[in-house]
Amino acid sequence: MTASARPTPVTTGRRAGRDRLPLPALVLAVLAVAFFAAPFLGLLWRAPWGSTWSVITSEVVQRALWLSVRTSLISMVLSVVFGVPLAWMLARIDFPGRSLVRALTMLSMVLPPVVGGVALFFSFGRRGLFGQYLDQWFGITLPFTTSAVVIAQTFVAMPFLVLTVEAALRQLDRRFEDAARTLGASRWYVFRRVTLPSIRPALIAGAVLAWARALGEFGATITFAGNFPGTTQTMPLATYLALETNPDEALIISLVLIAVSFSVLIGLRERWLGGGTGPGAG
Image (tube, rainbow, N blue to C red):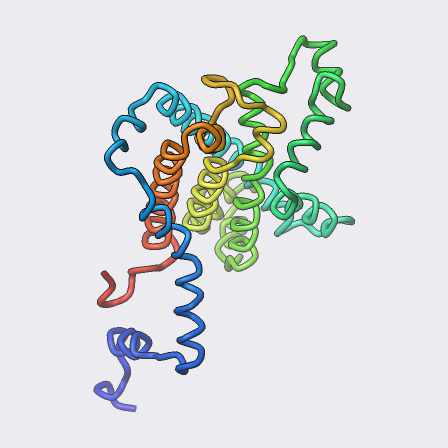
């Protein structure tokens, strides 16, 4: 094949962009998109736009928003600190019961959040399996505190980071790590300077997904932490309370959460998951 006949990256990208689904599959895909879009269109149609600013600037919403941002960011940091070593262990170390540990790690992803909150309560409550000793020995009471919000959010959010990072570690070419070890680098040095930079896109994607999941957490939070304004009332809890007393306010709070989450997911896709990197991407 001559040089002029070789397909260039641009040609390949354009060819991939012209791929089309068969008509029946395209119809089903459009229906799926409509299914996901319909609930949000309903919110946009029903939202009381005239009172949006007054609701967003109200003291209740401001306190809930600040608490949600603060606790979700702390949960994200905790997920990274504990989740990355856990993902590395699951991806790289073959030990008895690894499948059991992985299933246990991912369990909170499929459990109803309220069940997770009940489990946390009977583990870390004042009379719980571990909480009773925290109370007796250290005077620490976790339920119905801001710390309980962070614990509940981390419990449901960390698996998203672990799953993402473990998959990246399994796909990583280990020759660079082996070369660094051959040159005398320690395991910790290789982990910091070779492994982590190599999986940085997956690490950032997992951290952002964990943050987004923590920001939207409801069931485990209300069960384990309660719904106290300024202390444990996050934005999802404020939405639930407003739905019973002021549906218009609940609609606006819901739109705020949707806008934040949607923006994060779009940015995540474009920057770290390869979207928009090809020729002609918008």
